[in-house]
Amino acid sequence: MRLGSRAPGPMPRLLSALWIATVALGLVDVKRVRADTITFDQALALGATTPEVDEPRDMLEARQEGDEKMGGTAEATHLVFMPGALISPSDARGFDMQATITQGWNVRGLAGARRESASHEREALAATVRARALRARLDAARRWIDLATLTRVAESLDIRISGLKALVAQRERALASGVGTSPDVIEARAMLAELRQHRLEIEGDQFAAATQLAVAIGREPEQDLLQTAGDSPDPPLPDEDAIRRRIATVDGAPDVAVEQLRATAARARAIEASAEYGPVFTLGAQGERGALGTWVAYGITGITFRGPGHERRLTSIAEARAAGATAKTESTRLQVRAELEQALHEVRHSSEVLRLLEEDMLPALERLVDSRERAVALGEESYVAVLEARDRVSTAIEAAHRARGAHTWARIQMWLLLAELGSAGNERPSP
Image 1 (cartoon, rainbow, N blue to C red):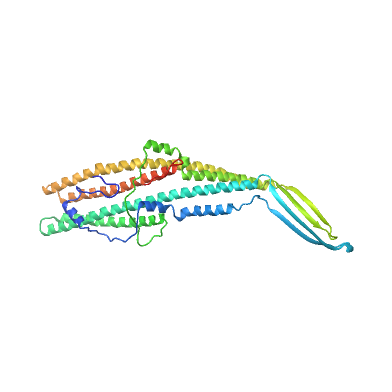
Image 2: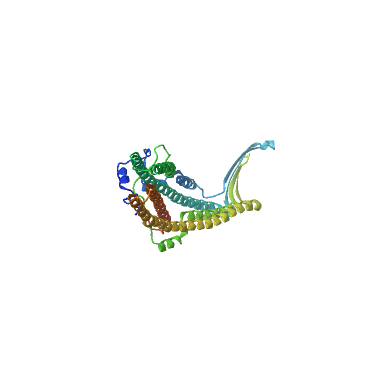
């Protein structure tokens, strides 16, 4: 039996005529909660609009606005006004005044270093927006797939519970008429109780998954839980050789780009820190009015040297941070490469697991059910053996739903990661 990627597949050989009849009645064993619905495409789009993504975006806008106001010089302009009076000798007493204006210029180009550093910091923030958006989309996609998988598992359990309830009733009627046996009824009741317990566990998992999905798309979790709607994604992936060629361009990954730009910004800040303690060349002018009404003008020139000890203290800190940022870049590159290799492995592995379940295990178990039902009809087996075989099939169906979800997630993860590794001009495809 083959389970489709978009909805639970039909199970004609799995259920007996009795089970199919009861399923047709639409019986369910759990209370449904009214919920909002969301498609995969909507979740993917909303994932990039969460507060976590907005944070660096808002910071970037504020930095751009503030950095535009950076002046052309990094040193201060000094204006000094000194009113006074000539006191002695007495015959020369009168008002006196001096006014001085000076402007300094850092000879190591501090103003340009500051603008350069600020530019690299803005580039790092812009890359952070991109990296955060990717991680947010990955999280939203994973949460959507998890919830969709649990929904299919829950629907499968509802079918099992409905069919088993009808079977218990049938066994009880048979026992009352003297046809059935007590062990058959006891076994069916026990299995029904176990299924109900498992369904309650799945309901708890659904609540957690719906809450996590709400957070992943920036929505406040509410009593009316989210439910997935529409088809599961099935993105196109290139062959493995093409994927490996793309993986080789790991420096294009957003996380790596962020760390590279942060390292560049850290080196720029180290240069800025060193320039900040460079000599300052000063030019200015001074005017003086004497008590006797005379005016005198002076030119001012000078150079200021700062203590080297203080400079080395601050620049050494900046240089250490730059060295650490370079190491962080290498670490991130390794982590991203490992993530891509793991994602590729999961695509292959989940595909094999799903194939084994759908093409080997489920057909074999369905044949086992048919065989035991024939044996019961011939009086060679107890009906308990049929129940046990059906339970194994149902368990395999649940495993297949989970494997389908794992395979869908593996493909989506690979697709989103590869899309961010694309060269310039390549657009991200639609799922």
